[in-house]
Image 1 (cartoon, rainbow, N blue to C red):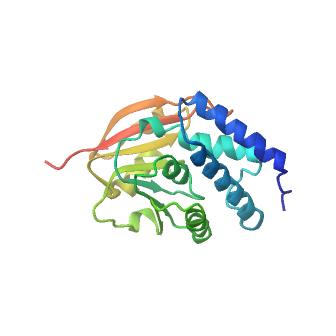
Image 2: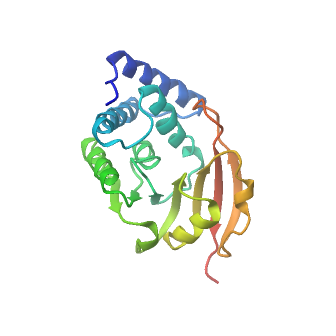
Length: 220
C-alpha cells in the first residue's frame, strides 16, 4: 500500500494547480480550485484500496489528471458533454467542476471506477454530473451528445467506430492524444471529418498533448 501523502504535499499541490492554471490562462474561482484538490484527496484515499490510477503522489495527480484535463477547456464547444472511458473521472470531473452550468455524463464499463466517480460527484456536490456504467458501443443515449470527449481510449479509427453513434449529427468529438497522432488520421469513418489538430500547452511535465477535433457530418 502506498504511503499517505503529508499535509505539506497537498499544500504544494494547490500551489502547483494555481501555477498550472496561470500557464493555461484559466481563471477558476477559489471554490472550484478547492473542489479540484478535494477530488484528488478522494482519489488518493480510494487508490490505497482499489488501485484506480497509476498516479499516486499529489504532484503527479495535479499534472496528469487535473491540468491534463483542464488544458482542453478553452477548446470545448458549448453543450452537454459525454466523457467516454472516463476511468476515475478524467477529464470529466475536472471539466464539470470548471463548467458548473453544463451537464456532463461520465461513461465507463468498470464498476469500481464508476463507483468512485459517483462517490466523488456526490461528495463534491456536483449536480451537473451523471455517471453511467456501460460499454460505449452498447450505450444508446437519446438524444446523442453535441460534444464527446475521450482521453487515451483507442486509436482514432477504432474510437470513432465505437463511439460514432454517441455524437449527434453536426456535433464534435474531441480526442486527447499524444504528440504522434498523424498516423491515426487515416482510415477515419466516412461520417466524420477532421476539423483541427491542436497542440496543448506543456504544463504537465510530460509529452505535449494533442487535441484532435472531429465533426460528425450532418445528415443530408
